[in-house]
Length: 109
Image (cartoon, rainbow, N blue to C red; front, side, top):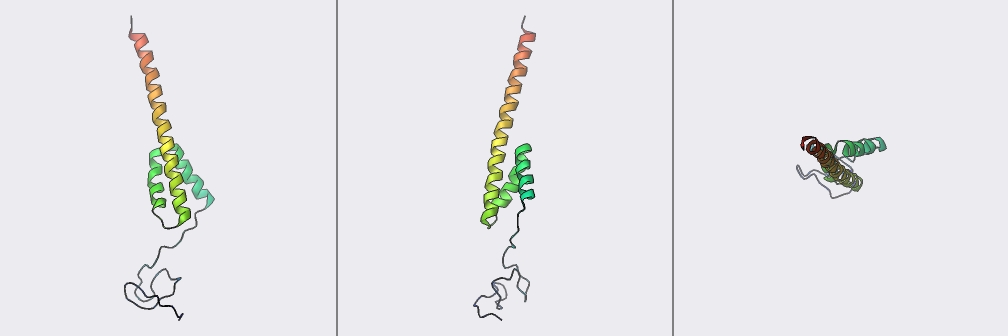
């Protein structure tokens, strides 16, 4: 066993710094770092751009991670979602105003 002073916070048995779970009680000691592939990032960014409201959930999920790379990805997803939502709302109001203008011109005598 390594000569570290680390112990499990649940059962207080000695553990190694690289353990993700306690070998004695099975307690979760730290989150396993996930490698975020480029394809996953592209899919998340596309989700944020093309389906704006749906981008908030993965954005918040990645923002809450302890990994700095995941936090950065979460911030990017949220920013893309907000920008895409603003553009979508602007486009809907513009089309609605055009439609109302056409409706007013056909109804006016």
